[in-house]
Image 1: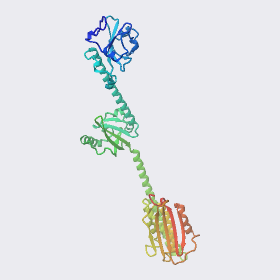
Image 2 (image 1 turned 180 degrees about the vertical axis):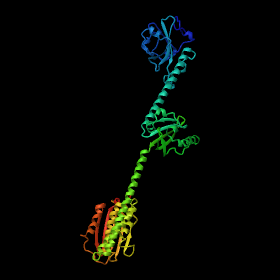
Image 3 (image 1 turned 90 degrees about the vertical axis):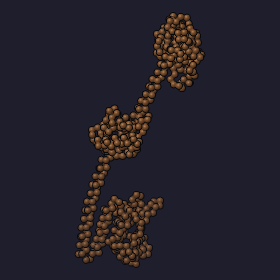
Image 4 (image 1 turned 30 degrees about the vertical axis):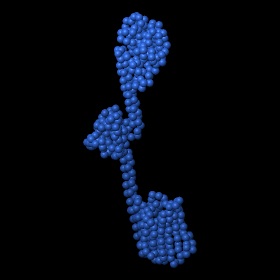
Length: 489
């Protein structure tokens, strides 16, 4: 089939058959011939239509206003937009023999299988027997491959940039290595912590960067074991190890290593936190605690010595006194009581004081053991040292009064009980009950001891205290908020 009258460079006959995607333009830029496939898919293109009304060349960027414009790009690869066609055409311009017309041969520019299907194209729209379309199709395939590679590379760069941003936003150092121990990622915190620039760290063996030399063999053995068994004793857990920076300074770090697979390759990401400041803080706390312990021991020693000296003076005064002997004896017993309580508190200052032990220490100067006169009934209860001092003052005053005027003096009955009441406001309830056949005062008031017993609990511990007289029985009841006296409440 001939394209028209004379042609010098190319004709359809020269290619042994019509080109399905082609058209011819005369010197007035009117289309004089339309190829089979182009005519089937674009009904608006037919003989007599102006080239510039339905076709535009987008590559190379040029405007066509005469046949000379088409001749200028003859032989070059061009890309066209054709009105009514959903895909672009890629082709080339060829001059006809007379020089008064041009032929454009092309094929659809398809970038994916989906685009091929959606365009409605068929395999018979292409002419594999024609050398020009075959060449164009090969060029198209090449460019599609290049485009796909560039797109894939762009996505990889985007993923790498996103991963780098995530790693650099972490508060801890993060280092990723492959299964050979080679560094593939090194975030900003790792750079600051170990003193290496990221570009210099990537590609290096991890052990030469941050692992002390004496641990190199262990590191290599761990990687080898994982390659052989896919197991590792330090994986997926937090451990404390020693690391080394670029300057050779070793320091403690917390390390967590997580293995993962990416595109069929094995990697490990280590999260590393510097523990230097934490260790220094712990050492400072330990030193302060040791200093406090020594000061407390020295203070306890001095207090015990002073109380011992006072007891010696009281014993000497007791031996020499006549009229005031009872007063001296009472004073000696009180000091002896406080000395025993102080000794108990100094030994149990951290663990707390068991209330039963405290009660017997206060009763010891007046009643040596539980028997017919004194009974203590209560569950085991450990109280904090601060509350123990206040309760010791109360128990000591009650024991002194019992020995001078009450149940111990008259060989009556003394019961000490306490209980924990867990109601709306949990509290410790302490009851001191004395009964005897001796004289009972009508009212408990006026004396310094009575004032101390009624005021010290509310003032020091925020509780309540009261005296009650019931015939031959004297009852002292104290209630203290539980969190003020019992550990853990």
